[in-house]
Image (cartoon, rainbow, N blue to C red; front, side, top):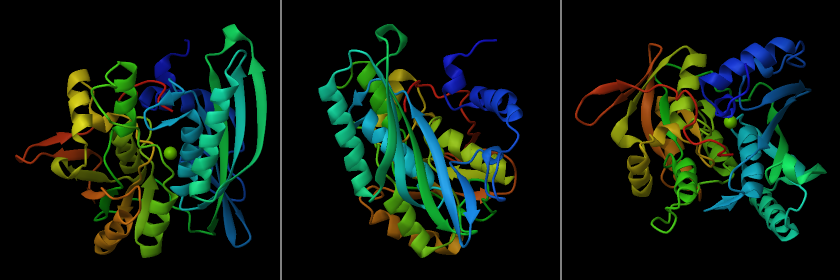
Length: 336
Ligand code: MG
């Protein structure tokens, strides 16, 4: 069998590849009893003294390199900062490893690095080590960036994506589908008909504000495969069901329009500046209020709750209920 695009698209096909070919061949998958590879969480942890180091890594193959609302530099920084953040850890630094195609425009690279730097500056994150490689014209499509991120959290305080509890409220930190749909619209040439932009942004502000309030039980950033993939993963790993309210899930009008035109569900496509979290019901309103004060969290909403069971259900305003399944693969490839 050979690798297809679906193997990298964040759905079930990718999950199977990871468990059957990658995890099976690696023996030491965690260190000092921390959260390791088997957890398939947003990052891993290494307990050291009173703290836990949180570490994550991401490869970025986005097409196109420049898109409405950002570029590969911003997404490389934000994506990695966000995976550290949703582990409940303060992001400290990232690394930057670039594989650049021979003939790549240096002015474009300058813009990309400036953008990566600005994104890190927003949340006081350093870019502290890196690597630069060049590949022949015919071997690579533009530029691939691999970033690792490191952060720190008090020992035992890391937030997993597998610890939803029955009765928790589910909060999403803003409108869903913006990144995937804006990229799709841009690729299809609709960009003159819409001013929709990617939501790509660092979410540490949102996460830290919610942790300050307390009651956060589980977190994940709904990137590839969108809200549908992230909430299903969280529910499955936690051994619970989730009931979402369709009319409470924020979706921008432009996203709805593009999604109707393309026949793609906005719940299935990537977000790059959003957090999905479970919060104890008695603190949910307060967490929501805190997040709404963040520059990237103004349209956050409580969208449902954790229930007994094993499925993610969506209730429509007219009273019907449907099962929300994880997409087989993100319908929009190469989104990050
Ligand atoms: Mg993640």
